[in-house]
Every structure is written in structure tokens, then in C-alpha cells.
Image (cartoon, rainbow, N blue to C red; front, side, top):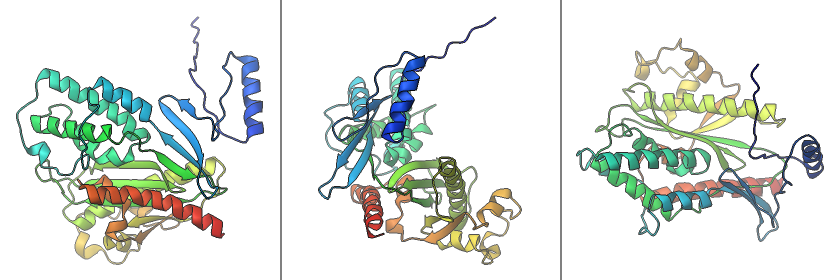
Length: 342
């Protein structure tokens, strides 16, 4: 004798105009629902803190964008961070976090947890380029130091001057995916010996999935760290492929994973990895067998300077950091140009 009521605060639907009108007409016939707002060049959509916009560039090509600037500005205002001086990069060096091991006060700890928790939402949704700094900060959430606090304030200051950054992709009739994988072999010995994995997936040039996390075990060689990272990329790529297929999209197979280390490619192709990896990786593990099945995913070599996933594994200075962010915009432009040529 329990009644459950489901309340939906907002609705987001995507499809052809006539199908959307039919859907909302049927919806309003059964439920109380506000008049829908349709995305267009003249009309943006606000959805749970995310702003969706549509623009037409000087060549007449249509683009769609996704940002959280309004919500980020409100968050930074609550944190009293607005008006900060420009910062070169959100985490240009790992040294700042180790500069002062004095524990923070209880008040500072509350601020630290609140800021990291809020940024987690933005990083998950749109701010992919902050995934690595946030990953490092979140690892100290239970017992941050004054050095960690200084790094948090620096990251917040950078965000206050970069809240406008958005995800952008051209409107095309087809869908393409590109995957990048990277690792930083024991890149921060002061925090531990485990390496860091970075994976990012682009759909028509726009990031749709990314991860920056410590690996579960210590990799005793850079080759081992790269193979762990490649395995994570393969898992994410396969999941993305399955989602696309469920949505009715035709996707090219195999999906290529861009890596800047030859070890991952050699391992996937079974080119006698025993000499360097003997005793490190059990070749009977299921994920190893999946990795070496090149039917769905294939590793290909890319130059380190062009590996976008590098931003998800290392602390980078302004020039390298901005170059990698710009590479994403270049990917979207290249996808658009390729579509026109076809």
C-alpha cells in the first residue's frame, strides 16, 4: 500500500523537428509540461546547469556547443574566487602540492572538500582539460596539506579566467570517433609509485568521454604502464562503440586508439613482448586477451606532441597545455573539412 510519485524537473530530447513536436504534443496530453524550447541559432537551451547553443560560422557551417559558464561563475562567486589574476595553467607543476606538509585547518578542509566536489561535476560534464589536476587534488581529499590548498586556489584562479571554455562540434550527417591513450610512468614519486592513465574519446572532434586516474598497481616499466593505459582506452572505446550502435549509428570498425609508445602497439600485435614484460603481465588475463583482439580496436602510433591524452597524465606549463587544447579544436575542423571533401 505504498504509492510512489516520480517528478521530472526537466526534459531534454533530440531528434528531427517533426518528431520532437509529436513527442512533446503527446507528452503534454498526458502530463503537465511547459512549452518546449527548440535549439537554434537564435535560441539556446538551459538544461541542469548546462547551456546548449548553435552557431553558424563564416563559411555557413553549423556548430553546436555545450558549456557551463553560468553555473561555474556562480560557483566561483560562492567560493569568493572571482577577479583572480590570470594563471598560466591550472597545475603547471606537481611541486606546489609538496611545498608545505602542514595540515589544513578544519575551515580550510571544508572549503577544500566543497571545491573539489563541485569541480568534479564540471570536469565530468565539460571541463575535460581539468581532469588531471582534479584527480591529483581529489587524492588528498581526506587529509589535505597547506601545499594542496595552495594548488587548489591556483586551479580555482585559472578556472575563474577560463570559465568560458566549451565543447564544440560541427553538425554532420555522419559520426566519427577518435581515441587517444597515454600514461605517465611513476610521474610523481613523492605521492607514490603508481603511474597515471589518460584516455580521451572524440566524437566528430568533440570530447565525449575522458578519464585521468592512477593505475591500480605499480608498473615497473614504461611499457607496462602504457599497456595498462591502452587497455583502459580499449574498454572505453568498446563501450562507446556499443552505445553508438544502440543509437543507430554506423561506426567504422576497428576504432583506432592513438598512442605515443610503440610498446602498446607491439603488445597488441603479439610481437614477442616476453623479453620486457615477462613476469609483469599475466598473458592469461581476460583484459589482455581482449586487448590483443584487434577486430574492434587497433592501436596506432602518434607523435607525443600530438597525443591529446598527454594533458590527462601530466602537469603541464601554459604553452604545452594550450597547444593540446587547441588540438581538439583542430580535430573538429579537420573532421568538418574531411566531410566536405567527401
